[in-house]
Picture 1 (cartoon, helix red, strand yellow):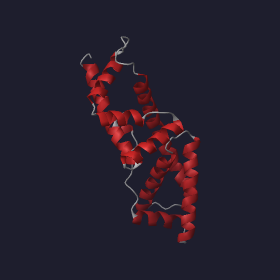
Picture 2 (spheres, rainbow, N blue to C red):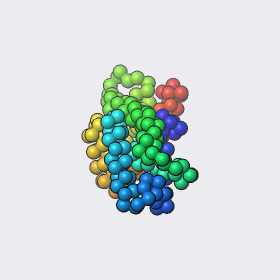
Picture 3 (cartoon, one colour):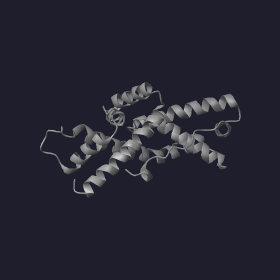
Picture 4 (cartoon, rainbow, N blue to C red):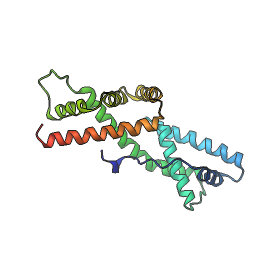
Length: 193
């Protein structure tokens, strides 16, 4: 998947953007905070019910996009509806990312061992490219895609904790490594293995 089809995370909310977001939800700061938490919980459920593995990340992405629109002058007459409208646009992006991650995970998991004679060209190239990675990057990429659904999420959280970096930083690192592997595989296939 090229970078144009990936969700491009918005910058983190600044204090000013968050304050504007809350002001758009209610004039009373406490009431605005309650409204924000309610919307956030509902968005997490929205993404979870539709099969998104990282529902909290996509919820944050939705909130960041709404905050940016408010900073650009958008007025929220019906905040819940507006948030859901943005979430409905983020959803297909998230599902595309997950489908790509699942396909790569399957390719890595199902690649034959080095001794097998029945290699396909793509798998042979994938194996070669994986072998060119530094051990740390190869291990990270394999562990990042291990498991299914909740197990995969928990594995990623543990991996982030072990590396001492936030989950989003781990995701970005894995994406960069995966992009390098993809370019390597495509180059290998073009050269005829």
